[in-house]
Amino acid sequence: MATVTGSAPGFSRLRRVALASPAFLWVGLLVLGPNLILVLYSFWTNRISVVEKTFTLSNYGDAFHSEVVQTLLWRTFLIALVSAVCAIVIGYPLAFVVVRYFGRFKFLAALLVIVPLWVSFLMRVFSWKIILGEKGIINTFLTSIGILDHPASIFLYSPLAIGITMTYVGIPYVFLTSYTMLERIPPSLYEASSDCGASMWRTFWRIVWPISRPAVVISFMLVFILVFGDYVTPTLIGGFSGTMMGSVIVQAFGGLNNWPFGAALSITTLLAALLFLGAVSPLLRKRVVLEE
Image (cartoon, rainbow, N blue to C red; front, top):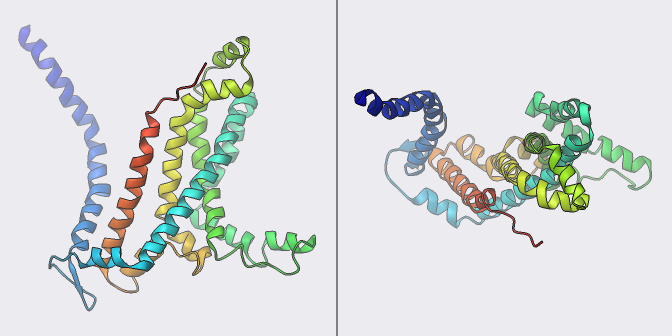
């Protein structure tokens, strides 16, 4: 009897490891493995488009000392930050309104919001290229009502175009994450707060926001990473003034055929994103302390 009891904890741990092993294998093969290969390539030498397995730090030196890379990294960070914030400003209140006031129709409303996720990413980007173009819907509307004398080019091939497009792309992710968290708040909490004389704003600030804030932080991280590593949108609708790090990395691997330098740019971009997200992550655990 003692032997069986003593082996139970070990068997339980072994079972948990066995159940989690597919996830670990997935992460190892598709996340850690490719990034380790990038790290190796970033320390190798490129000689006339031929990769030599000779250790060097020159790839990172070229990346860190390049004003172009610094400018593009800063632009990429700003576009990702603004897009993520705008997506939250739109998606989170929308999720709150749907959960709180749509009643039995909230599932249908949520379904309509996340429908764009079923459409190809390229199709969504191309649709915004049509909308923001000089003959697009926005320019046509503004010229027809007399606000513009001629179509404006600011809406397309600019950082503004990327920000608008990626905000649109990020809204369903913010909505879905926030909706899932907000729906878990029992209606009794709203009723109890109202019975205690709290206003709707106070109820939101004291109850809803502390509970749903982790969902907001997670959705912010999700959209930020999505924008920070994107190269399709800058290529299609960003133009020269909207060039981001993703486009440069693709060019380094493709047109320049300089894989070590492209790997160094990739690792630099990845580390920059991880450092920022590491600074934001404490908000997932931090509690809101409010005065009575």
